[in-house]
Amino acid sequence: MEITGFDILFRLLFAHILSDFVIQSDKVVSNKNKKKVTSHIYHSLTHAIVSYCILLQWDKWYILPVIFVSHLLIDLWKTNQKDRLFSFTIDQVLHLLIIISLWLILTEQFNRLADSYMYLLKNEKIWGITIAYLLILKPSSIFLSLFTKRWRMNDEIMHNLQNAGCWIGYLERIMILTFVLLNQIEAIGFLLAAKSIFRFGELNNTKDIKTTEYVLIGTFASFMIAIMIGLAVRGLL
Image (cartoon, rainbow, N blue to C red; front, side, top):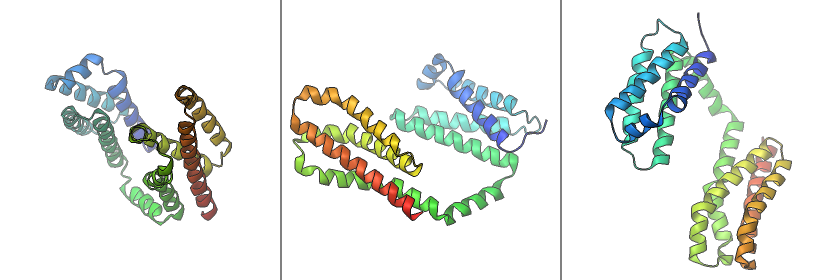
């Protein structure tokens, strides 16, 4: 049976998710974290066999060694990293790159990929949207930090906001910009309501109106920046 196109990519992705998250036991994960090479070999071999069987491309024998060796090397690298979130993210990105590369080899779509890449480079909408998402991250955070500096109470509060609040700001602005670009403005109201509910208990316990006002100023400023950037991009494109 001849399998072509995105069917191959979906099968490779399914095999990866199945092998890496569903059928991989906690014992294997524990042994891998203890740097037991036999467990790494077992897991990588299982991954290669599952992918080969699901893909049903029996004449493409190189699928087995490519997936086995790449998965083994990536997982061995991951085991030696201390930052679990960083290593997990890079680990999955590398696996995804191997899968996409294998898909391109099996489907011989390198020319098509090159054409798509050139189309993206020449597409002004892609550039505009990319710039918008970049603006709502670090540049907006710096602006908000400077804007709210006059109302900042103490270094301890600001330190906490930098750790958690900064990432909350990133995520909320990404969601708001996405809502605006998708013309789902009403969803922003639900986001604001949800944030208000989560923060209500915290602000109520402090019984400090200054803290409440500080949070509101930062929230409204963050929302306004994301909405304005989103509307500007929509207007320009």
